[in-house]
Length: 279
Image 1 (tube, rainbow, N blue to C red):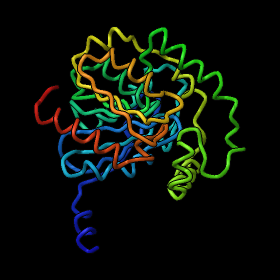
Image 2 (cartoon, one colour):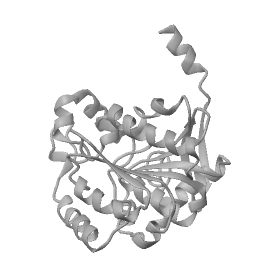
Image 3 (tube, one colour):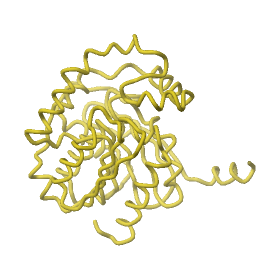
Image 4 (cartoon, rainbow, N blue to C red):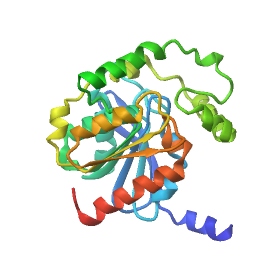
């Protein structure tokens, strides 16, 4: 135990607020090395990545943030999807980071896809996990909007403790302790603003994404009800250099439900891109 504590004390880290148009974006960073930014989904905040951060600290500078309207970041009237990309830009600019690996879960996929389309030269790689990132064709749009039409029928207040649409029922049964922790995280901050939900109606041009020469990893939980594996496999056609990985026994929050399995997929991909200087 003493050795573990001693090691932890030698990990560089910091936190702060990055100025953005009309607000400030809260962020934390840990470690040294190539920058790796993790963007959370609609049901989370920077806290959602607590299990994943240690997997990268030996080789990367890991950055987490609260998108505007989440956690410690104040919302703005700006509704457009571009606001999510601007959150990423604000943090990277504030930290003086020119290029980074970008990971986005659910809503975070919209953020990193939007950032890549605007500033592709600043992106080393993209990891879209349990998300289509707003990149839609007619089929993906129809499927996503079909989910939106039914999602509002679920009253979260009526669900048993530990159950949530963002995680699979099997996970709640298997790891009630972590499901409860996720519930407690949700009580720390106000519910997601309606403006954030409207940002998810924004779309990115799949043809423009296909034109980018950026390595991409598309990871998805086998039991994701929002973006199931067939949707992610269809999404892959819009990334020239992509691979799809399905994480078994995980729902819409594969990184939280099965962090070890998620890390075994994401870490080798990042290491390969970094080592070979692909981007």
